[in-house]
Length: 79
Image 1 (cartoon, one colour):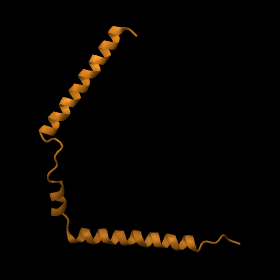
Image 2 (cartoon, helix red, strand yellow):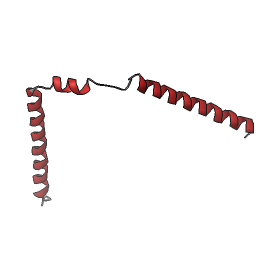
Image 3 (cartoon, one colour):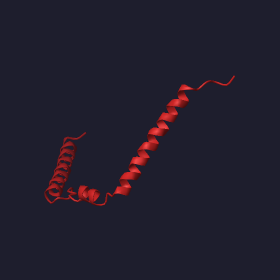
Image 4 (spheres, one colour):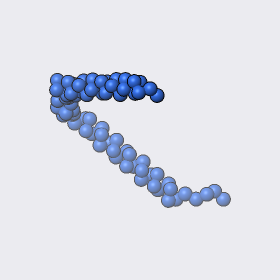
């Protein structure tokens, strides 16, 4: 490769990297990545019915795992 080509490639990649870094710093400074209401909304809209549903689903999952364990223990090939 030509020396001029290498210098051009390095300078273009350095410029693009610096541009990306400036964009990231700008986004962090202006609060583009902040989601302050995420946890508040989760607590605000979480009601007793949703909690019961979650508990019921967890119990069903445990029951399926126990059933699977019991089937694996009692498995015997057909004669």
